[in-house]
View 1 (tube, rainbow, N blue to C red):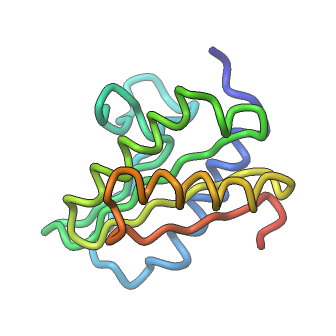
View 2: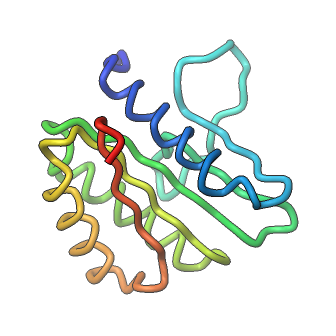
Length: 136
């Protein structure tokens, strides 16, 4: 399926946020599942899902998963299973952070979806961040 321009812009917002907010993390590698050169490294699958952005350092002290969702994609069953899988994975990582980027109209709903799934999978230790396309 072709990546929408809105989705691609949301992925760029996540990457920019990680670069700004986690610049102090030494040797932080950021891998994205976005259009890039053939053969470029992409994130590994987590319970069958490929995150839009996966960042980690070595030795592992921080693990970040970023996921971009359009308004129509936010509450599909597939998206909920995907977010739950990512939160569960991060629960078992040192300093796990889940970043969701959505259009500004969906920000409050996205926060609720993530919080609900976080409670369902027992991932209270995972820090969550919700970004929107207005930079708020």
